[in-house]
Length: 224
Image 1: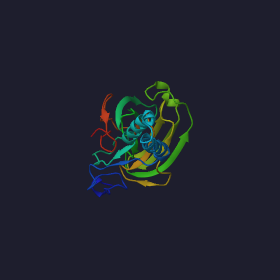
Image 2: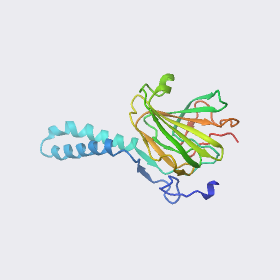
Image 3: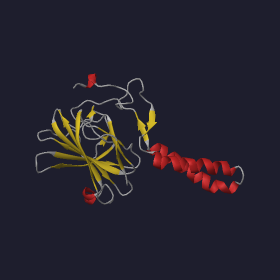
């Protein structure tokens, strides 16, 4: 499937006429709604008593911070057989015993935390694996809570792993096994700092290096 044939618009998460538009990520209501409601309520109460400002100010700041954290901008699809599923920095690139190469992308709290499909295909598995919550940059984060994805693509099976961090306590998949995806489509959200791993199939060299900053749906992962 060529990039030119892919749909462009909010359903696929790829920009067309909506370029530059930013929306909120799906799955944020349980976090954002109570905070925003409390900020609005204390702002109203401040009119009755200035003392409520002690609560209203931090709640308003927290609401603003959450709106920034849960932003979900439209993207123009990058070129490549495999593209980055996450905004962040390449933390490590490791050869795997089965011939694949693992590219680990660390996502700080400042990054967009909506993840995207690295290639077009069919979701064959979405598995939640319980685990710990050590910082995502720690080598022991491989044992953290995670969601393991498998995509059947033109390159074969592509594995992607969403890993929760010390703050991220909830991974929200948007799709399930059997779903068809286009490259760059939104597939899930990790709330707060975390990591996403992609396993490049045997024979495919990475186009990124450790320290490369990636943009979900844009940065090419496979070497030409």
